[in-house]
Length: 313
Image 1 (cartoon, rainbow, N blue to C red):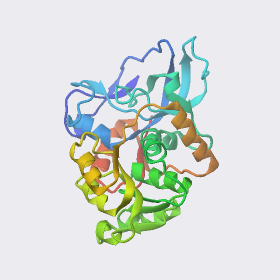
Image 2: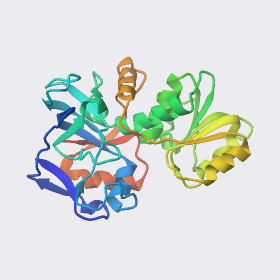
Image 3: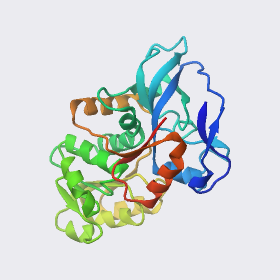
């Protein structure tokens, strides 16, 4: 089978197309999926470069988001049948090898692909969708009438979080460049702040929010404590290991939590239902063929992507 492998840490140029990689074989509780699409997330850039060596030393095949068709089913699996269209985030953060023509995955880490969307759109959803769902539904427990601030609202995680917060009945404030404001209004954002021309901490100083979802790093979490109401919550998708932020949260009279994503079939089913109901749209700015994965990595690293980048397999 074809797969994108890397033999060393480095930039996008270390990603190489391999033709003739061994096709994986499903074991107990697993299915074999013919991959139709995957997508690129910031975490893969960090793993590729060696900054986040969660897969150990190369060689390895990157990729977690997957959408495709079930080709083989272990006899003990009754959740899916051959021919079913599925999507998911298998094994994360262990190796899944989704940048390939086939992957194996535990059946209970997949869900049926939302009807009416492409494989590229479905593959762009699992990691960012589950992160936003865990952050806003399970951790922050967003309620109708609350105000939610989403940093990096126009990006992969941000544009999904805006829609989930809106679905939960919140008033949604987002930070994004001006060029993404019309796009985000179309997704339901109520108020947008251009981070290039305005300081959100000043803009919201007298209009505090109940929840902040921090997706960017770079000191935004610390500064965001100042725009939270007493008792509010800041959820960070990038500051998982901080020992400073919990202390600052106590001093500010708010709650801090880090969100980590994991395979979650129930969460995937909730996201699929939102997509099918028209309450959630996955925006794919561009889809690249598998052999051009390195170009997608370079484009994501350059910044400014609206929504997600997908990979057609």
